[in-house]
Length: 290
Ligand code: SF4
Ligand code: SF4
Image (cartoon, rainbow, N blue to C red; front, side, top):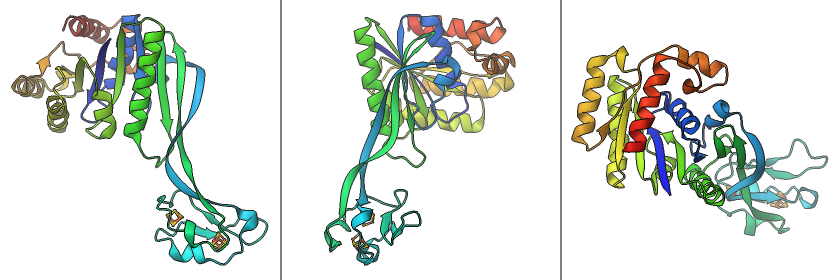
C-alpha cells in the first residue's frame, strides 16, 4: 500500500488544507489524521463517526474513597502533591488529582488500608468515520494527555486496517507539525513525505529540521512552498535548500484568500474554483507521479 504523509516543520503552513484537498482529489484513499494534539482534518471533511474507542496510556493512582481513613500517609509520600483531601466526597477522604499524578506507584504500598491501586489512564479517544472523501481514522487527546506518538501510531495502524478492508491502495496521512514523537510515528512506513512550508526565515529553519527527520528515516521527500508569492526570494531559498537535502521541490501554491473563504464554508480549496485550487490540483498530479 502506498502511504503519502503530509508534514510541516510548524503549524499553520496549510498542511491540513493540502491533505484535505488530496483526500477529495484521490477518491481512492483511506485517511489518517495523525496530528492527534490538534486534529483538524475532520473539521474540513465533516465526518460521520461509525466507531469510537477510548484511548488509554500510562497509569494513575486511584483511591477507594469510601474506605479511606483520612490518615494522610499517602499525601506525605507523594512527591508530586497529587493526593489531596477530597472537596466533593461527603466524608473525609484523600483523592488523586489525575493532572498531577505521575503514575510512580509510590503511594500504593504505603496506604495502611491497602485501598490505592494503579489503573490505566484514559487520555483520549480515537474514531473511525466516513467522510465525503473516504474513510477517516482520527483521534482526540485530552489536554495534557501524553503519548501522542503512541496514539499517532495507533491512528495509522487502524487506518491501514480500514484501507485493507475496503481494498484501498492508498493511505493519506495528515501528520503533526514539528519533529516530535508523533511526527516520527506519522513518517513510519511512508512511501513519500510531502513537506508544506511557507517562504519565511522561520519557515526555512522549520523545514530544515523536518527534512532532516525524513533523511534520517530514509523516506523519499518532496516540498511544496505554500503562499510562495508573499516572498518569492525566500521561496527560491527554500527550494534551493530542499535540493541540497535531496528533497524534490514540486508545484508551488500561491497566496489566495479563496482558500480561507472555502474553509469557512466547510470546503476544501479544490472543491471550489480558484487559482490556488488549480495549483493544488497540479501539485496532486505531481505527487501521484512522484
Ligand atoms: S502514583 Fe505517585 S504521583 Fe501518583 S499519587 Fe501515587 S505517589 Fe503520587
Ligand atoms: S493512606 Fe490510604 S487511608 Fe490514608 S488517606 Fe491515603 S488513601 Fe486514605
